[in-house]
Length: 20
Image (cartoon, rainbow, N blue to C red; front, side, top):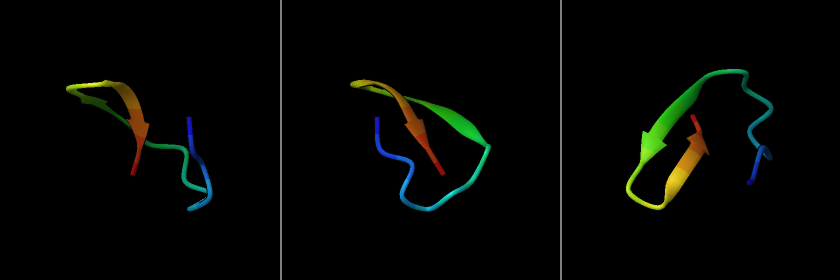
């Protein structure tokens, strides 16, 4: 997982979980 944005919000992507 990539949290370079530094956000704490998650979203369900087609590849699994991602950060927005």
